[in-house]
Length: 230
Image (cartoon, rainbow, N blue to C red; front, side, top):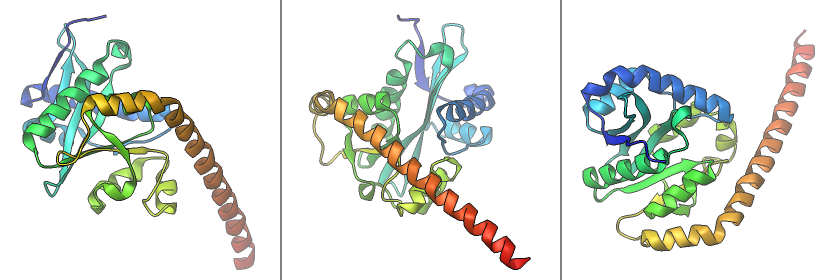
């Protein structure tokens, strides 16, 4: 169903939506039981001012979705903070926004590798349609500034326990110098979609089980330590 949404590069004209977008990002992360890098309205306004954000507008002129660009040393680019308002999540907006922010990223940083982390099969499919491929974490930027953004995620302990080499998220990458065509990555995803779904479920069950076990051991240690001290 097409409602004639506009998906455009955000500017200072859209500053008034920044606070509401931040609030929806936080609510969405809470509902999913995961987390995203927490950003302030001022940070989103900066992205808009720099021309490094995309916003979707409803026919009535209200914000319907959003995404922004982050860059590390001009070598790696991430399309971060993808969000679609709940009432607009049945119109294919996520794909429209991802396509627009990908296009903007390629225009601004034509030589950079574009990557993302996701726990969602739907986002994996959208990325595959754009030419992204699943990769290991070692192929992502190792800049500490990026990984600091994961601190607000409920799975951060898992990430650190794996020495930033694995987590619940799947890493995906588009390398402008070495990549398959979107038709190929899309077809490959369709062929392996069930396998990816099983992998995501397996990682969630295994990592969360280990995390709960570690928390239990830490709790027992804390109680024993308090007995010893007193």
